[in-house]
Image (cartoon, rainbow, N blue to C red; front, side, top):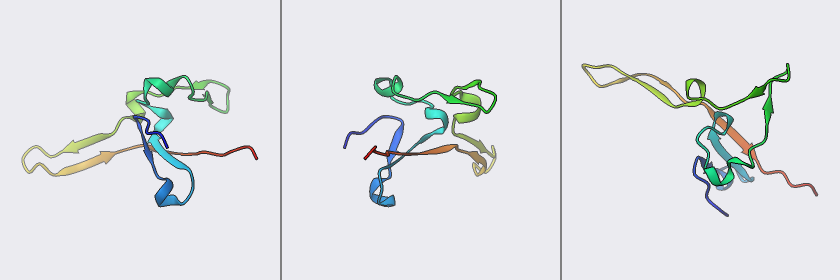
Amino acid sequence: MINVDGTTNLTTTMKAPVFASKGHFYQISPEVAASVPTIKNPDGSVVTANSATDETTFGIETLSGLTVQASQRIQTNFDIWND
Protein backbone atom coordinates (compact mmCIF):
# COMPACT_ATOMS: atom_id res chain seq x y z
CA MET A 1 0.00 0.00 0.00
CA ILE A 2 1.48 3.36 -0.98
CA ASN A 3 1.14 6.58 0.98
CA VAL A 4 0.12 9.69 -0.93
CA ASP A 5 0.62 13.15 0.56
CA GLY A 6 -2.76 14.79 1.03
CA THR A 7 -4.65 11.57 1.82
CA THR A 8 -5.33 9.43 4.87
CA ASN A 9 -5.66 5.68 4.49
CA LEU A 10 -8.85 4.52 6.26
CA THR A 11 -8.73 0.94 4.96
CA THR A 12 -8.11 -0.64 8.37
CA THR A 13 -10.80 1.43 10.08
CA MET A 14 -13.47 1.01 7.41
CA LYS A 15 -12.61 -2.61 6.43
CA ALA A 16 -12.66 -1.48 2.78
CA PRO A 17 -10.22 0.36 0.49
CA VAL A 18 -11.17 3.89 1.56
CA PHE A 19 -9.03 7.03 1.57
CA ALA A 20 -9.86 10.49 2.91
CA SER A 21 -8.63 13.72 1.36
CA LYS A 22 -9.42 17.41 1.45
CA GLY A 23 -12.36 18.42 -0.73
CA HIS A 24 -11.82 18.20 -4.50
CA PHE A 25 -8.37 16.62 -3.82
CA TYR A 26 -7.06 20.00 -2.61
CA GLN A 27 -3.29 19.90 -1.91
CA ILE A 28 -2.92 16.35 -3.22
CA SER A 29 0.62 15.15 -3.94
CA PRO A 30 1.95 16.43 -7.29
CA GLU A 31 2.94 12.86 -8.20
CA VAL A 32 -0.72 11.80 -8.38
CA ALA A 33 -2.37 15.11 -9.33
CA ALA A 34 -2.49 14.07 -12.99
CA SER A 35 -4.61 11.04 -11.98
CA VAL A 36 -7.30 13.14 -10.27
CA PRO A 37 -10.59 12.79 -12.17
CA THR A 38 -12.42 15.79 -13.60
CA ILE A 39 -15.35 16.71 -11.36
CA LYS A 40 -18.25 18.57 -13.00
CA ASN A 41 -21.28 20.44 -11.70
CA PRO A 42 -24.74 19.51 -13.02
CA ASP A 43 -24.44 22.41 -15.49
CA GLY A 44 -21.26 20.88 -16.94
CA SER A 45 -18.77 23.39 -15.49
CA VAL A 46 -15.57 21.91 -14.06
CA VAL A 47 -15.16 22.02 -10.28
CA THR A 48 -11.62 22.85 -9.16
CA ALA A 49 -10.06 22.80 -5.71
CA ASN A 50 -9.48 26.18 -4.11
CA SER A 51 -8.38 27.51 -0.75
CA ALA A 52 -11.64 29.41 -0.14
CA THR A 53 -13.77 26.27 0.15
CA ASP A 54 -11.37 23.35 0.62
CA GLU A 55 -8.84 24.61 3.19
CA THR A 56 -9.04 23.71 6.88
CA THR A 57 -9.73 26.84 8.95
CA PHE A 58 -9.78 27.70 12.66
CA GLY A 59 -11.20 30.76 14.38
CA ILE A 60 -9.30 31.42 17.61
CA GLU A 61 -10.56 33.72 20.36
CA THR A 62 -7.66 36.11 20.96
CA LEU A 63 -7.78 36.45 24.76
CA SER A 64 -8.43 32.85 25.87
CA GLY A 65 -6.96 31.00 22.87
CA LEU A 66 -10.09 28.84 22.56
CA THR A 67 -11.22 27.61 19.19
CA VAL A 68 -14.59 29.24 18.52
CA GLN A 69 -15.00 28.18 14.91
CA ALA A 70 -13.49 25.40 12.82
CA SER A 71 -14.13 24.14 9.32
CA GLN A 72 -12.74 21.13 7.49
CA ARG A 73 -14.04 19.63 4.27
CA ILE A 74 -13.30 15.91 4.05
CA GLN A 75 -13.88 13.80 0.97
CA THR A 76 -14.00 10.01 1.12
CA ASN A 77 -12.60 8.14 -1.87
CA PHE A 78 -13.36 4.47 -2.49
CA ASP A 79 -11.04 2.24 -4.51
CA ILE A 80 -13.40 0.16 -6.67
CA TRP A 81 -12.04 -2.54 -8.95
CA ASN A 82 -13.71 -3.65 -12.13
CA ASP A 83 -14.18 -7.39 -11.59
